[in-house]
Amino acid sequence: MPRTFFSTRAGTWTGFAAAAVVLFGLAPLLLTGFRLGLLAQFLCYAIVAVGIGLAWGRGGMLTLGQGVFFGMGAYLMAMHLKMADAEFRNGPGAVPDFMELAGIRELPAYWAPFASPAFTIAMILVLPTAFAILLGLAVFKRRVKGAYFAILSQALAGAFAILLIGQQSLGGFNGLSRFRYFFGFTLADPVNQQMLYFIAAGVLLAVVAIALQLRRSRYGELLVAVRDAEERVRFLGYDAANVKVVAYAVAALFASVAGAVFVPIVGIISPASIGIVPSIMFILGVAIGGRASLVGPVVGALAVAWAQTALSEQFPSAWTYAQGLLFIAVIALLPGGIASVAGVAKRFQTKRTTVEAAA
Image (tube, rainbow, N blue to C red; front, side):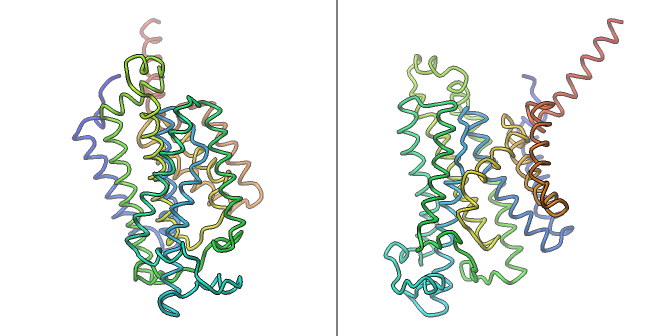
């Protein structure tokens, strides 16, 4: 494969610098507060997409259940935000407002630790990652892969959403909403809303950098080898299951962090945001952008989220059909996604030149 400019160290720094200029300079300057908030929401989807690109694009694991880990991070953050609101209103140990309306007079024991910001952040990082490791070991050690793994992960997302609907202490079907404070900052303040956008942009650049480092490392090469020739990797003495578990856990961590950032930006999290349909939307963005590339999942996630918002504003009853047509068109014409446009154009030009020379 020929070495391109952006695969060099100088090209990498140039790409990150350009992205930083766009995200931290141009976007806040050109977009209104409402549109900037939408972009912050889309960036959270892009963070999830980076993890899927690593697990699916490099590792061959079709993760149809990332809504589970996105939801874990989101609900953990939402619990802290509701605790902060309750303590500001009625003092330490107060019951959140939605519990009062549901008739819950005593704070559940598992809610109490989430009054601590440090504990909340630790749980957002540790709990989904640990769950992904345990699940990955249980699945990959038994050599479950392909469509079976995809179906299993999708069923997990559906089961998780149904479980949350039945939990009145977590808001039930309505979820958790009406947050007022974020680590001491008032969420209604436009300045703080812009701060949340900058946090989302910074996290996205950080996870892209981590994914890039993993892709270029020895582990990244081993992950591709497991995807393409798993039995040969085992023959060479490597545990292919452990290699897969690492990628799956990293993707879960990215999704959890994205969910935690998503909650204060959007102001609500419910089972409808983390079930089967949202998980498929994550995959859809990665497929359209190009799962094999580093930036493709980011571009695809942003494009799908923007199309969903724009089309739903113009055609409320038909935007889902338009999304389906977009997916079919990209898969049929560009199997490698949007990221493969340059390569397809180059091959077309080379073929055209060869034909003209032969003529």
